[in-house]
Image (cartoon, rainbow, N blue to C red; front, side, top):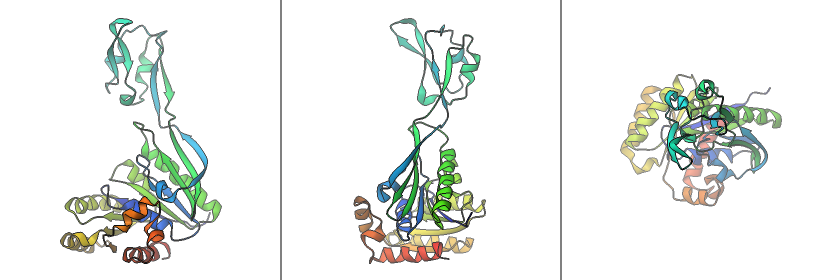
Length: 297
C-alpha cells in the first residue's frame, strides 16, 4: 500500500468555516479523495456534488420492537429500562394503558428482550443510515448520513475513513482531505485518529479561542501534527493577535489568516469552492499557501 497523506480539518465549534476550507483544499488538485466525516450533519457533498455509484447501509445498532400478539403487558420491561424508553401510554384497546417503546429513547441495550418472560420483544437492526462512494470533479468522495436519533457516529466515521483509504489506494491518490465534525466528541476523535496532519479552523471570538484550545489539546494527545487557520481574521484583530500569541507559545503554527470575504458565501450558494468561484481573490491566494504547506510538503 502506498503512503497516503491524510489531512483532517476540524474545529472546536461549529460555524468557523471548516467545511469551506475542506472544500477548497479538495478542489485544488486532481485525483484527491475527499471524506466527509461530519456524519451527523454532512454538507461537504453539497459543494462537491459527487456522482455516487455505491451506496451501503450502515447498521448503527438495534432497537426493541414489541410483538403485541405475545405481550402480556406485565410491565417487567418498563420497570427495568434505565433509559426511560418504555412507557405506559393511553390506548382504547388497553384500559390499563399500553406498554410502548419510545424509539428515539431506546439505547439498544437488549435488556428488555432478555428479561421478557414470554419473549415478546425482538431487537431489530437500525438500518436507516447509509454511506456513499462517488466521483466528483477532482477525484473520489466518501460521505455518509447518520439517520436522526441513531448512534455510533464515531463508528460510522471510521467506516468512512477506512473506505477513503481503500479508495485512495485503488486509484493511486496521494491525499485524503477529511472534513471532520466540530467539537471534541467521539466523531472528532475518529476523524483525527491516524491522520498525518490536523488543521484546526477557528474564528476571532472568545468562544472560538476557547474551543480551539480544547480541540488542540485533544489532537495533541494523538501526537498528530497540528496547525491552525484563523478564518475571518480581520473582523477582530485583537482576538486574532491573542490566538496567534497563544499558538506561538504552545508551538502550534498558524498557517493562515483568512480575511472575511462575502464571496465565500456566494461560492457555496453556487455549489463551488472559493478556489473555483474566485480564484484571483485574496482568500484564494491564502488557501493556496495553506495547500502548498499541507499537501505538497
